Image 1 (tube, rainbow, N blue to C red):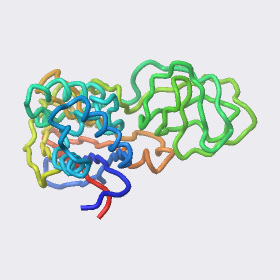
Image 2 (tube, one colour):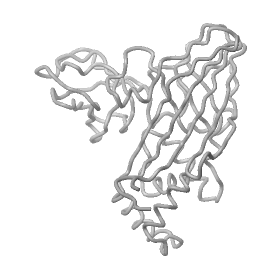
Image 3 (cartoon, rainbow, N blue to C red):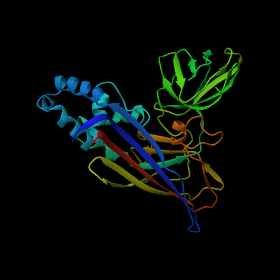
Length: 307
Protein backbone atom coordinates (compact mmCIF):
# COMPACT_ATOMS: atom_id res chain seq x y z
CA UNK A 1 0.00 0.00 0.00
CA UNK A 2 1.26 3.47 -0.85
CA UNK A 3 0.39 6.18 1.70
CA UNK A 4 -0.02 9.68 0.36
CA UNK A 5 -1.49 12.78 1.93
CA UNK A 6 -2.83 11.99 5.38
CA UNK A 7 -4.04 9.59 8.03
CA UNK A 8 -7.32 10.44 9.70
CA UNK A 9 -9.65 9.44 12.49
CA UNK A 10 -13.38 9.85 11.99
CA UNK A 11 -16.12 9.35 14.57
CA UNK A 12 -19.73 9.06 13.39
CA UNK A 13 -22.83 9.17 15.58
CA UNK A 14 -26.20 8.08 14.17
CA UNK A 15 -29.41 8.60 16.18
CA UNK A 16 -32.75 6.87 15.51
CA UNK A 17 -35.84 7.94 17.49
CA UNK A 18 -38.18 5.00 18.15
CA UNK A 19 -41.64 6.07 19.29
CA UNK A 20 -43.64 4.07 21.81
CA UNK A 21 -46.06 3.21 18.96
CA UNK A 22 -43.21 1.65 16.93
CA UNK A 23 -42.74 4.47 14.40
CA UNK A 24 -39.18 5.63 13.69
CA UNK A 25 -37.36 8.81 12.76
CA UNK A 26 -33.76 8.54 11.56
CA UNK A 27 -31.54 11.59 12.08
CA UNK A 28 -28.67 12.54 9.81
CA UNK A 29 -25.33 11.21 11.09
CA UNK A 30 -22.89 13.55 12.85
CA UNK A 31 -19.30 13.07 11.72
CA UNK A 32 -16.06 14.46 13.09
CA UNK A 33 -12.82 14.01 11.17
CA UNK A 34 -9.30 14.81 12.28
CA UNK A 35 -6.48 14.41 9.76
CA UNK A 36 -2.73 14.39 10.15
CA UNK A 37 -0.36 14.58 7.13
CA UNK A 38 1.99 11.69 6.62
CA UNK A 39 4.95 14.01 7.26
CA UNK A 40 3.52 14.64 10.73
CA UNK A 41 3.29 10.89 11.36
CA UNK A 42 6.86 10.48 10.11
CA UNK A 43 8.04 12.90 12.79
CA UNK A 44 5.99 11.00 15.40
CA UNK A 45 7.56 7.71 14.24
CA UNK A 46 11.04 9.22 14.50
CA UNK A 47 10.36 10.47 18.03
CA UNK A 48 8.76 7.24 19.21
CA UNK A 49 11.66 5.10 17.92
CA UNK A 50 13.86 6.91 20.43
CA UNK A 51 11.42 6.31 23.28
CA UNK A 52 10.18 2.77 22.61
CA UNK A 53 12.64 -0.06 21.98
CA UNK A 54 10.04 -2.21 20.24
CA UNK A 55 9.56 0.53 17.62
CA UNK A 56 13.25 0.81 16.83
CA UNK A 57 13.16 -2.01 14.30
CA UNK A 58 9.84 -1.00 12.73
CA UNK A 59 10.01 0.67 9.31
CA UNK A 60 7.87 3.74 8.65
CA UNK A 61 5.64 1.81 6.21
CA UNK A 62 5.05 -0.90 8.83
CA UNK A 63 4.34 1.79 11.42
CA UNK A 64 1.59 3.28 9.21
CA UNK A 65 -0.01 -0.12 8.68
CA UNK A 66 0.12 -0.76 12.43
CA UNK A 67 -1.61 2.57 13.19
CA UNK A 68 -4.41 1.80 10.75
CA UNK A 69 -4.97 -1.64 12.31
CA UNK A 70 -4.70 -0.42 15.94
CA UNK A 71 -6.61 2.85 16.36
CA UNK A 72 -6.56 2.72 20.16
CA UNK A 73 -2.77 2.35 20.12
CA UNK A 74 -2.50 5.26 17.69
CA UNK A 75 -4.55 7.43 20.03
CA UNK A 76 -2.14 6.55 22.82
CA UNK A 77 0.80 7.60 20.65
CA UNK A 78 -0.86 10.94 19.95
CA UNK A 79 -1.04 11.49 23.68
CA UNK A 80 2.55 10.35 24.20
CA UNK A 81 3.86 13.03 21.83
CA UNK A 82 1.65 15.70 23.34
CA UNK A 83 -1.06 15.89 20.69
CA UNK A 84 -4.60 14.69 21.29
CA UNK A 85 -6.97 14.19 18.31
CA UNK A 86 -8.99 17.33 18.93
CA UNK A 87 -12.58 17.30 17.84
CA UNK A 88 -13.12 13.57 18.25
CA UNK A 89 -12.58 12.80 21.90
CA UNK A 90 -12.25 14.76 25.10
CA UNK A 91 -8.98 15.52 26.89
CA UNK A 92 -10.21 13.41 29.80
CA UNK A 93 -10.86 10.51 27.44
CA UNK A 94 -7.38 10.67 25.92
CA UNK A 95 -5.76 10.84 29.37
CA UNK A 96 -7.76 7.81 30.49
CA UNK A 97 -6.79 5.89 27.36
CA UNK A 98 -3.10 6.68 27.71
CA UNK A 99 -3.07 5.72 31.39
CA UNK A 100 -4.77 2.35 30.96
CA UNK A 101 -3.08 1.44 27.67
CA UNK A 102 0.32 1.15 29.33
CA UNK A 103 -1.11 -1.61 31.53
CA UNK A 104 -1.65 -3.73 28.41
CA UNK A 105 -5.43 -3.48 28.67
CA UNK A 106 -7.82 -2.63 25.85
CA UNK A 107 -9.34 0.58 27.27
CA UNK A 108 -11.18 1.71 24.16
CA UNK A 109 -13.89 -0.89 24.70
CA UNK A 110 -14.57 0.54 28.17
CA UNK A 111 -16.18 3.56 26.48
CA UNK A 112 -19.51 1.88 25.96
CA UNK A 113 -22.13 3.63 28.14
CA UNK A 114 -24.57 5.85 26.26
CA UNK A 115 -26.59 8.66 27.84
CA UNK A 116 -28.53 11.81 26.93
CA UNK A 117 -29.06 15.27 28.31
CA UNK A 118 -30.98 18.52 27.95
CA UNK A 119 -28.11 21.01 28.39
CA UNK A 120 -27.00 23.67 25.93
CA UNK A 121 -24.23 26.26 26.41
CA UNK A 122 -22.08 25.56 29.44
CA UNK A 123 -19.06 26.76 31.34
CA UNK A 124 -18.46 30.34 32.36
CA UNK A 125 -19.24 33.17 29.95
CA UNK A 126 -16.10 34.97 28.77
CA UNK A 127 -15.65 38.23 26.90
CA UNK A 128 -13.72 38.84 23.67
CA UNK A 129 -11.89 42.18 23.59
CA UNK A 130 -11.27 42.59 19.87
CA UNK A 131 -11.90 41.07 16.45
CA UNK A 132 -10.79 41.66 12.88
CA UNK A 133 -13.10 42.58 10.01
CA UNK A 134 -11.31 39.97 7.92
CA UNK A 135 -11.84 36.58 6.28
CA UNK A 136 -11.80 34.59 8.44
CA UNK A 137 -12.62 36.68 11.49
CA UNK A 138 -9.91 36.47 14.17
CA UNK A 139 -11.10 37.07 17.74
CA UNK A 140 -8.86 38.36 20.51
CA UNK A 141 -9.59 37.03 23.99
CA UNK A 142 -6.74 36.75 26.48
CA UNK A 143 -6.57 33.35 28.16
CA UNK A 144 -9.54 31.98 26.23
CA UNK A 145 -10.54 28.42 27.24
CA UNK A 146 -11.19 27.09 23.74
CA UNK A 147 -9.44 24.46 21.61
CA UNK A 148 -9.36 23.87 17.86
CA UNK A 149 -12.60 22.24 16.63
CA UNK A 150 -14.59 23.43 19.66
CA UNK A 151 -18.04 24.82 18.88
CA UNK A 152 -18.79 28.14 20.58
CA UNK A 153 -21.56 30.71 20.60
CA UNK A 154 -20.82 34.43 20.23
CA UNK A 155 -23.45 37.02 21.11
CA UNK A 156 -23.75 40.73 21.71
CA UNK A 157 -20.70 41.84 19.72
CA UNK A 158 -21.04 45.05 17.73
CA UNK A 159 -18.88 46.70 15.09
CA UNK A 160 -17.96 43.51 13.19
CA UNK A 161 -20.67 42.17 10.91
CA UNK A 162 -21.17 38.42 10.66
CA UNK A 163 -19.46 37.62 13.95
CA UNK A 164 -22.40 36.71 16.19
CA UNK A 165 -23.55 33.12 15.88
CA UNK A 166 -22.41 29.55 16.35
CA UNK A 167 -18.90 28.71 15.15
CA UNK A 168 -16.38 25.94 14.96
CA UNK A 169 -13.11 27.63 15.92
CA UNK A 170 -9.38 27.26 15.28
CA UNK A 171 -7.21 28.19 18.24
CA UNK A 172 -4.33 30.33 16.97
CA UNK A 173 -2.75 31.18 20.33
CA UNK A 174 -3.62 31.53 24.00
CA UNK A 175 -5.21 34.89 23.17
CA UNK A 176 -6.64 34.50 19.65
CA UNK A 177 -8.87 32.16 17.67
CA UNK A 178 -10.44 32.26 14.22
CA UNK A 179 -14.03 31.48 13.24
CA UNK A 180 -13.97 28.74 10.62
CA UNK A 181 -15.72 29.83 7.42
CA UNK A 182 -16.44 33.37 8.62
CA UNK A 183 -16.44 36.49 6.46
CA UNK A 184 -15.95 39.66 8.47
CA UNK A 185 -17.17 43.14 7.71
CA UNK A 186 -17.70 46.48 9.41
CA UNK A 187 -15.13 48.96 10.59
CA UNK A 188 -13.98 48.13 14.12
CA UNK A 189 -14.79 46.10 17.20
CA UNK A 190 -17.45 47.86 19.24
CA UNK A 191 -19.11 47.62 22.61
CA UNK A 192 -21.99 45.37 23.60
CA UNK A 193 -22.13 42.40 25.94
CA UNK A 194 -19.36 40.57 24.03
CA UNK A 195 -20.21 37.08 25.26
CA UNK A 196 -18.48 33.84 24.25
CA UNK A 197 -19.61 30.47 25.59
CA UNK A 198 -18.83 26.83 24.85
CA UNK A 199 -21.35 24.50 23.22
CA UNK A 200 -19.24 21.42 22.49
CA UNK A 201 -15.54 21.04 23.16
CA UNK A 202 -12.46 19.02 23.99
CA UNK A 203 -12.54 20.17 27.62
CA UNK A 204 -16.01 18.70 28.27
CA UNK A 205 -15.96 16.23 31.16
CA UNK A 206 -19.69 15.46 31.48
CA UNK A 207 -23.02 16.25 29.90
CA UNK A 208 -24.29 19.68 30.82
CA UNK A 209 -27.60 18.32 32.15
CA UNK A 210 -27.86 14.52 32.02
CA UNK A 211 -31.44 13.23 32.15
CA UNK A 212 -31.74 11.90 35.70
CA UNK A 213 -34.67 9.56 35.06
CA UNK A 214 -32.87 7.33 32.54
CA UNK A 215 -30.22 4.68 33.13
CA UNK A 216 -27.08 4.69 31.02
CA UNK A 217 -27.09 1.75 28.64
CA UNK A 218 -24.09 -0.41 27.74
CA UNK A 219 -23.83 -0.74 24.00
CA UNK A 220 -23.41 -3.85 21.89
CA UNK A 221 -19.81 -3.71 20.72
CA UNK A 222 -18.32 -4.87 17.44
CA UNK A 223 -15.36 -4.41 15.11
CA UNK A 224 -16.86 -4.11 11.62
CA UNK A 225 -13.29 -4.07 10.31
CA UNK A 226 -9.81 -4.19 11.82
CA UNK A 227 -9.62 -0.40 12.01
CA UNK A 228 -13.12 0.25 13.43
CA UNK A 229 -14.73 0.24 16.88
CA UNK A 230 -18.54 0.35 17.11
CA UNK A 231 -21.00 0.60 20.01
CA UNK A 232 -24.80 0.45 19.53
CA UNK A 233 -27.25 1.13 22.36
CA UNK A 234 -30.95 1.83 22.82
CA UNK A 235 -32.01 4.07 25.72
CA UNK A 236 -35.69 3.92 26.73
CA UNK A 237 -37.21 6.99 28.37
CA UNK A 238 -39.36 5.73 31.24
CA UNK A 239 -40.21 7.66 34.38
CA UNK A 240 -39.90 10.86 32.38
CA UNK A 241 -42.77 13.32 31.95
CA UNK A 242 -42.95 14.29 28.25
CA UNK A 243 -42.25 16.42 26.36
CA UNK A 244 -38.47 16.26 26.79
CA UNK A 245 -36.04 17.93 24.40
CA UNK A 246 -32.80 15.97 24.04
CA UNK A 247 -29.93 18.30 23.20
CA UNK A 248 -26.80 16.28 24.00
CA UNK A 249 -25.47 12.72 23.78
CA UNK A 250 -22.45 11.29 25.54
CA UNK A 251 -20.34 8.12 25.55
CA UNK A 252 -18.72 7.29 28.91
CA UNK A 253 -16.58 4.62 30.54
CA UNK A 254 -18.96 3.62 33.35
CA UNK A 255 -22.63 3.18 34.24
CA UNK A 256 -22.35 6.14 36.62
CA UNK A 257 -19.83 8.99 36.80
CA UNK A 258 -16.96 7.64 34.63
CA UNK A 259 -14.86 9.38 31.99
CA UNK A 260 -16.45 11.15 29.02
CA UNK A 261 -15.07 9.95 25.67
CA UNK A 262 -17.25 11.86 23.22
CA UNK A 263 -20.08 14.37 23.52
CA UNK A 264 -22.30 15.66 20.72
CA UNK A 265 -24.41 18.76 20.97
CA UNK A 266 -27.64 19.02 18.97
CA UNK A 267 -28.41 22.49 17.72
CA UNK A 268 -31.37 24.09 19.46
CA UNK A 269 -31.44 27.50 17.85
CA UNK A 270 -29.72 29.19 14.98
CA UNK A 271 -28.11 27.03 12.34
CA UNK A 272 -24.35 26.70 12.73
CA UNK A 273 -22.48 29.39 10.87
CA UNK A 274 -20.25 27.01 8.90
CA UNK A 275 -20.60 23.75 7.04
CA UNK A 276 -17.91 22.28 9.27
CA UNK A 277 -19.88 22.92 12.43
CA UNK A 278 -23.11 21.84 10.75
CA UNK A 279 -21.65 18.36 10.30
CA UNK A 280 -21.26 18.04 14.05
CA UNK A 281 -24.76 18.95 15.16
CA UNK A 282 -28.34 17.95 14.46
CA UNK A 283 -31.83 19.06 15.34
CA UNK A 284 -32.86 18.27 18.93
CA UNK A 285 -34.76 15.02 19.51
CA UNK A 286 -38.12 15.48 21.20
CA UNK A 287 -39.44 12.73 23.47
CA UNK A 288 -43.24 13.00 23.33
CA UNK A 289 -44.39 9.84 25.13
CA UNK A 290 -43.21 7.67 28.00
CA UNK A 291 -41.64 4.63 26.38
CA UNK A 292 -40.05 6.52 23.48
CA UNK A 293 -36.44 5.46 22.92
CA UNK A 294 -33.32 6.54 21.04
CA UNK A 295 -31.00 4.07 19.38
CA UNK A 296 -27.48 5.41 18.86
CA UNK A 297 -24.68 3.93 16.77
CA UNK A 298 -21.16 5.21 17.44
CA UNK A 299 -18.38 4.26 15.00
CA UNK A 300 -14.71 5.24 15.34
CA UNK A 301 -12.57 4.64 12.24
CA UNK A 302 -8.87 5.06 11.55
CA UNK A 303 -8.03 5.31 7.85
CA UNK A 304 -4.92 5.98 5.81
CA UNK A 305 -4.84 8.20 2.74
CA UNK A 306 -3.42 6.98 -0.56
CA UNK A 307 -3.93 3.96 -2.77
